[in-house]
Image (cartoon, rainbow, N blue to C red; front, side, top):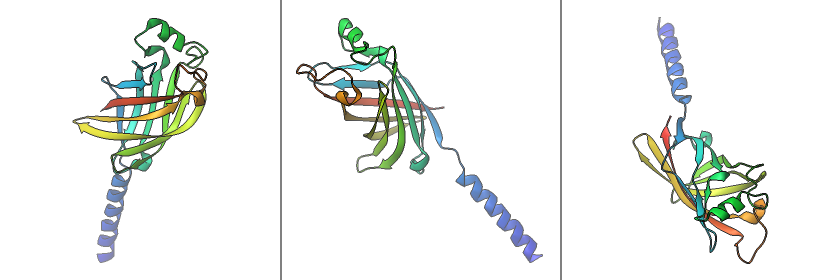
Length: 179
């Protein structure tokens, strides 16, 4: 009788531990209120359309993921002519490459928050970037924010110029609601 009771107890323990081991990571969807800006001596501006999914759990960073997309046609520099030029084949080539994409490959804790490393794709060119992020949480919404530099020449966005700097500072605030 003791062996049957021990077997039942052991089986219950295995089932309970398996249930906790395979809990799904929280799924978030990019929600309104995001900002994606870029700053240089000239030009500066923002993108006004972003979408994506974030799977995030502080206790399971190995399985946490970001998959984000920015619509290039929504570039806003404060100058309509410059916005149109940014979409031409010389710059972002929005007809052929309508989105800037970021897909994470790893997330680690840092002294100030997290470092999200992943593949950044513009104009069909993919480069690995490590992006610092600070996370805040309010109810069912998490928000990631930070800034990093992108070398536009690496992605063949425009040509070297004395007017437009090679490096652009990208600032972002990305809220996502649990979906």
